[in-house]
Length: 72
Image 1 (cartoon, helix red, strand yellow):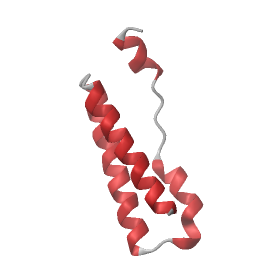
Image 2: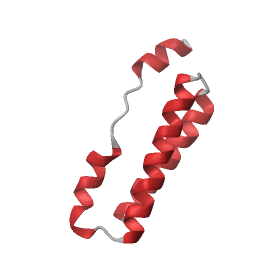
Image 3: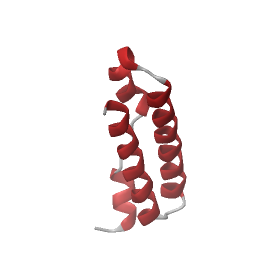
Image 4: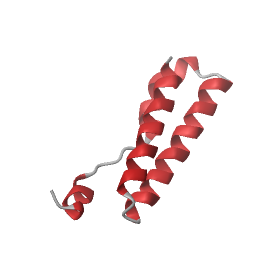
């Protein structure tokens, strides 16, 4: 699959939607992980716009890891 086809098929979501599930258990620790996840997602979007696909995927993975830590 060509790179431009891949980038046109990538859909991003706002992590605040995911974080809303943990509303009842927000602590300073969960908020810190949330902000790191949000920053990682912003970085991934910038890398995607600049066609740095491998690095974009890395930061998406980091974002997911931080969201998992929010729920842990």
